[in-house]
Length: 92
Image (tube, rainbow, N blue to C red; front, side):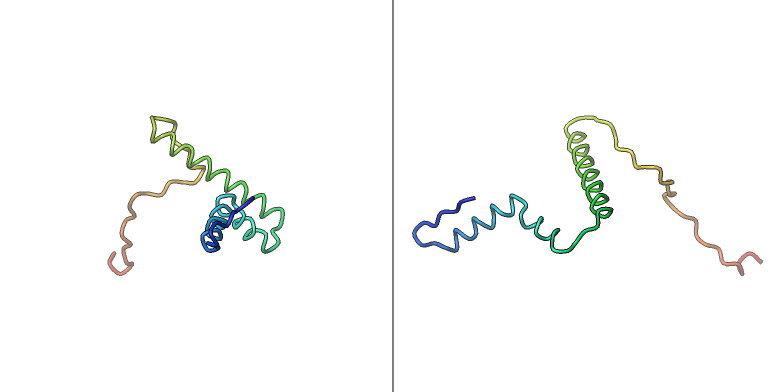
């Protein structure tokens, strides 16, 4: 990577360097490597990132046209409303 300083404008060169580093993902990589990450945690994070990319891709494809809706998993569905709790004294 090369940044040229023109007419002694160091601040502008630094801004462009930081922008290029950010676009390349260097700052994110440094943040991840700041502490040790166990292999199991690393695997789980990578799986979550892959799911996030897949959902994003599906969302974009659905906005362009009618595509398949993503599955929500095996989680039980919650009712849209819950009945109000009745106090035990009120039943008498």
